[in-house]
Image 1 (cartoon, rainbow, N blue to C red):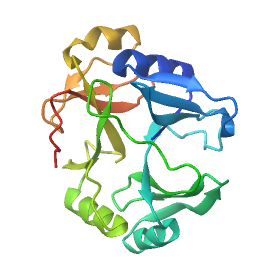
Image 2 (spheres, rainbow, N blue to C red; image 1 turned 90 degrees about the horizontal axis):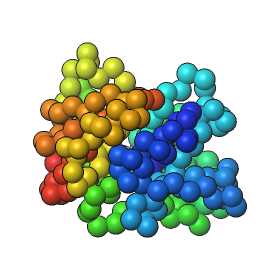
Image 3 (cartoon, rainbow, N blue to C red; image 1 turned 90 degrees about the vertical axis):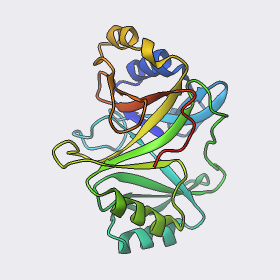
Length: 229
């Protein structure tokens, strides 16, 4: 995953306080990448919307990369299944090959074919560890079919939830993170000028969070390790 934000420092402080994530800048990496780790395990990176090649109206969001062995083939299948190609397959140096698309429901996602960079993996379930990807959309059955047909298999970490067009104006993939004590977040959110957490009807036993910049996520207690569909 890659958090795209116009406030790298503030986003890092928020995610550290809420999730216990660690942020570090690698001066020798491409674009001086800021990496995210939890419990000593790299899980993602951060991109600055203010300095990258992003339109000025691009909102803060988290981009997700789905691993494939042939990005050109999978991107072509996705387009046949109704996706819009935003970035055709392109080599990212020797690190890998990337394509970015928007699925038929309107949610953006990327496909990644590994080169020298094989991507990140997750540690065992524990506090602060990402647990699931959640897509709220108007037609979850269509979404499931699209991703199954595009990838050849449905991602086991994905959860598809139905919602009305009124409540989901911009469908997007969002992250659910495990926490040891999610009930104590109200004070943390207030310190970071963020909305108070509220109970979510999308995932059982989850709380819905929004950062000051609008980044949305879910938190669940660490015993919520059973996949939800």
